[in-house]
Image 1: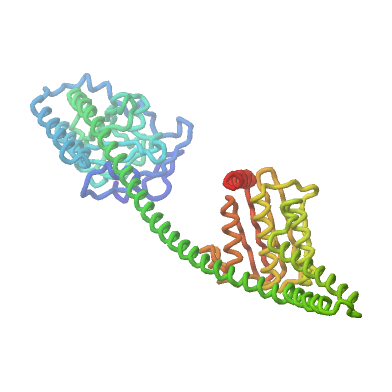
Image 2: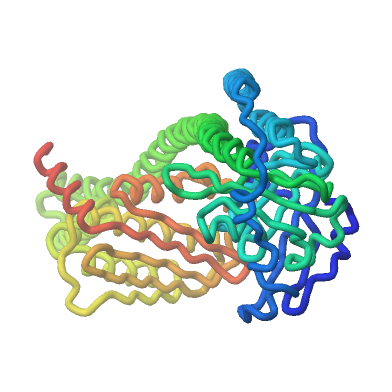
Length: 497
């Protein structure tokens, strides 16, 4: 409708709100190369029948006159030609068939304007919109009327053909639409027994009166409108499905690209991890070799020298003292050997479980490194699957090593929580935190030194998750391992062993 519609005065109890926009979800049903007109988007009416219009509905209905007026003779040849033309249009250009249908109605009914009204779908059918109009109102394509207060709604409510006269007397928003409506013939059309819209013909000339032949033609064209609507709805659904498929394919391609990039990063990270692991093993072997040489090696050298002296002189006056020193040296060797063995794999872990091994290690860590360490574990903690206990202990070892080497924290708190489905180990320090770029690199690639990467791989192997939060006030490392997965992995490893 033209812009003057925006200023239309609606009768008492009605109001026009907002601007007029077309129905976006039904664009595919409109004709091509047309100028869309605004649509009545928010016409609201109260429930009082006396305020729904200036006159009652019956005062503008003249449907009964169709039977009483003289009717022109049917022109079946013209009608058949029109239906054939519509069928060809539906086959050749289905998206413009509604506009062709409107032009056919205009021609066979010799009206001033003709068009199609369809219920909107995106809002549950609260409005009618006009996808196709022919004649003097053609510029109003895209306009429409509210479902609950308009001629099309009356047709659907009564489920029959209706003839209106001077509709602006009741529906006052038509007062600003030119040319005015003298008579309007509206016919419902159905899809699978459900009304989805109307076809209509409008006479602007007072001398043009619709008759029974117009009603017959409109009813015949209404059946065609039903077929056209179903085909267009199917095309719209197909286009939507194709659009969704294209979106899915695009998303899949992006996902594949991201996945390939992630695989490349993880492969590169694993390669780096392998190299670092080999370097770490070499460094560990070098450290143990140095420890053996500096501690046990020296003790054994001293022991050999003392035994050589005792062996060379059977009655050496210092023999008892030398033998005593030999025994002390043997005890030191045993102590050093036990310490190294415990550090490699504490027997307590196998014999008494994670709780005992953790207490032993945390106490030793506090004594050796001078860091105040607090361990909180559940009372009467039961044994966990072997693979879970080993993973927790190694994570505890590596975490405390990182605290000692990198954090500068005077304290560390270790908390163990055991639930029916999972076990959680949290290590919290009050140090300087992990550098931001190192933490971001770890979160993105999974690598940031052999320690964190190794812990992450241990947890991932058991189906768990490793989370690291860090700032300048300290670092919290949390490892969560599901117990059922850990139990299954323990059983699998036992079978393989």
